[in-house]
Length: 217
Image 1 (cartoon, rainbow, N blue to C red):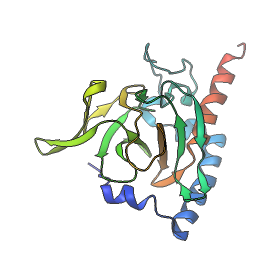
Image 2: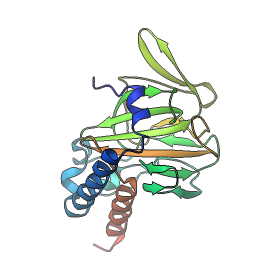
Image 3: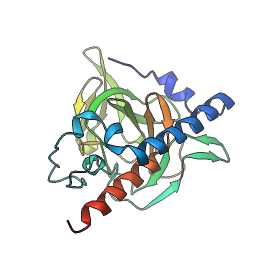
């Protein structure tokens, strides 16, 4: 199993020129992939015909990105974009939601890391083929059970172990204020083939797919 150490999460927050160059290169790569070949970069398991979960915020259509889930319930606002800001480079987007709002897995995948000892706070990392999605500042804590690290949120009735499979739209956490944060929100980060990309591009692709699917046939 591919492992993302807590150190790797901490390093991702460093503001170095090398990381910034990689991030901009990844942004350009993701832009060309998302808008020129959506069906090719969507995780393979859901490029096939997928069945939307009845209780999840998942679009029902044939376009590849339509089966993805918006990552948080109780959406209020986008509070910080991907890119440069006063404190350095921001490797994701911040989505404000009331504290305790449930966080959902963007896509089918495997939990490759749970952590609670970095600026990311209590976090879950899910891998879906070439894509990796990171969820930060959640409620709960991480413990060890039978040699495996396990994320626990007793108040939300949630427990996730490293190596566990998750399905698109599964509730995998709740919005909190752990780690470096000034208010309740989800920090949502994404990597494509190991490089950080702008999650806003993915959300735009999802929205574009919904609009196309709503057009008369």
